[in-house]
Amino acid sequence: MREYTIIRRPEPMDWAKVPELPIDTVLWNTEAGVRAWAQLCWDDGALWVRLRAREREIRAEHPAGAPLAMPCQDSCLEFFFSPAPGDERYFNIEYNPNCCLYLGFGGERARRVRLIPKRDPLDPVAKRTEDGWEIAYHVPFDFLRQFYPGYAPKAGDDLRANCYKCGDLTVREHYLSWNPCTSAAPDFHRPRDFGRMIFV
Image (cartoon, rainbow, N blue to C red; front, side, top):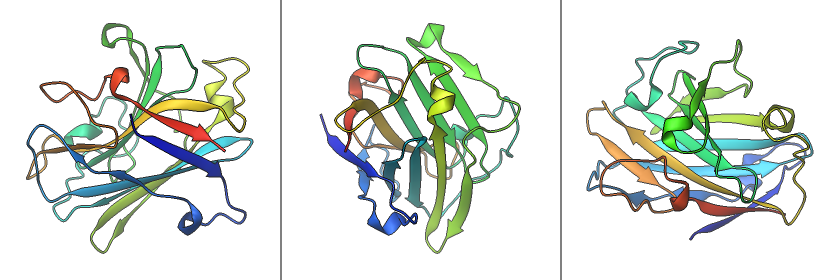
């Protein structure tokens, strides 16, 4: 199991000071020349996330705000995490370069639900880069407390998580993860394959 340290958010915010996490496990024999990285930090109010991809052939068909769109069909960067030890439920946050969001929550696949808020609670900002694209957002702890009352992480706490890069309908289909996935076919919804992230 891979581990990553989530540092306190720099003041002023400076992603150059936040350690990178490589999304570098190529899955299911789908090498497509795509590479990706994640960075996470935290403060008393939120978990801050930045995901970046080096990807030349970007697909971005689904628009932001489309409630039933599937951003995983496009170029997509994803963060899945389970905040509470011993609780099998987890969030899946999936974005394409247009900030089209798929936000899911629950335990095993048959009992998961897609959350469709009136406005995106994560305030994402996406941009194209010279060799790909990136997206940054924050997950407010007030939002998490709707599902985990009293949730307030402190130094030494941890969460189980994984970061992914995919593109189901891109020119070259691809799947990458931070912590390796052990399924025989493409499937990111496997909490058993999550790594450990530690707040410091």
